[in-house]
Length: 227
Image (cartoon, rainbow, N blue to C red; front, side, top):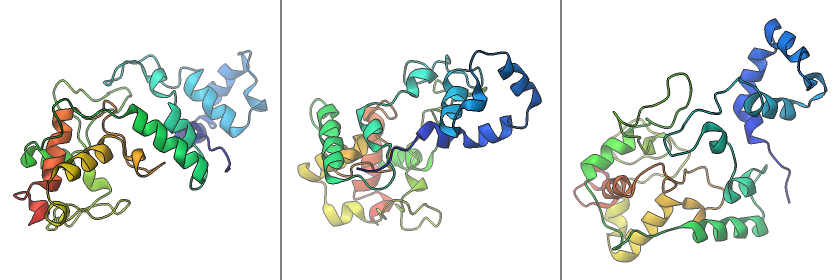
């Protein structure tokens, strides 16, 4: 087994550094029952995020619930909050948990509109919480696929964290087995790639309709991805 990694500490390390220089913060902290000077960096990060007013944990989030509830890890997140690649036992637990939570759409998997999918693939909008959180009532959240993948071969700007998906549909087709596999990966990629960096879009980040559009952009023969 490998060492535990505190994700909250990683998220707020810059905030902790900034607060370290604020006299008012430490003056206020001295009046509290908690002695932050006795905390490890990880404990301090957890305290700043969850137990003080440094972050708006009571703010409602678009997927439902509050910011505090968003910070609570589910089984897959807890298993993957580890340093290094998961060992075989952990990987098996992650895959099992991911598959247990997966739901195939009623009526089967279908492709949507690849043009809508192209827009979603390029958009990184959505789910930011802060003083000016994203408004999903005026603009839908995006999938941000290009942050990690090449898709349209004509595009020149894309990330390389994930594999190239150029010509994906042209090489694999669109039969039922391909549709089911791609939906499973987009919805919850941990079913095949335990502890991957890829988001679980089926967990309230994209609707089933949006997922169908992204899949069409990836698989439709008319999509520029497959030209």
